[in-house]
Length: 369
Image (cartoon, rainbow, N blue to C red; front, side, top):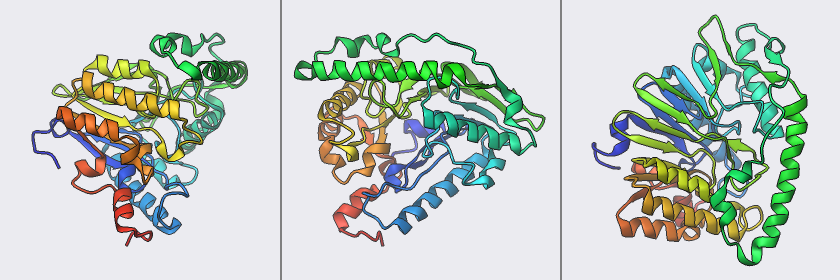
């Protein structure tokens, strides 16, 4: 636990739930009345706990999140994975926590993959049904049909020397472009779009992508959309956030997985945040869905953020804390922060606790008792 003068306390920021506490989540509350990514999911099968314990920890996370949802007049959803927004079809009792709120959500019509397209519509439909409204009344023809190649703007990543991996990378980028074009011509270009709205009960729905707004004394700048991981990641796109409370600047990465893309690290550095809430790489998927090259990129980019951003505190958590060997996988990041005297810690450590995965490994106690 840090002192009363630490930057999160100064900014009025509460770390509601993160993976290091035992359920998938990256939920943050600000005293100005804003909650970011109110969702939680149970850990994956490889996480060393019985399924009953994983479900119980997910329920603990959702209870904590509901406490802050009740008092937050504004909500941001950076994407539609269920560890970032509660599944309202599964948990309809949560619908009431979104009613009467200003909802700033990832645009559900573009820069979104297939699964999140439908999850977004489920979320919006649940909100509307609570006021006896129908989503069909809020659909319209597509508003856009031209999209530039999103990788072309990633000049740093494109200029990087990938050595022997360069040819394979070129093949993967071309496959990614074909996937991107299929989304442009398919879902985004031919299916009906959801419209923003305001309801009689005070609920308002606005797209958060690349806009600025204020919530009481907090100024929010939403960036992106950024890839959820590496270039043309099939997991879609997310919306990172820069929040100025007047005293502290906070950079919330959402799911950039490291970041794996050099240009995203450049932007974090450029913003000169006091605090970075940085999601780590998904090392629990190494080497099958996270290859050695992209893990190396994530490590190098995190090191650059430590060295160059000027951040006083980095909360390094999320995907990374699903892996028994997470400390060894990112040892270079941890050591660099230690050498430079930068406070880099998990959410659990910030709260004065040992990350659950560390406890389970050290105690060799698969039951979690």
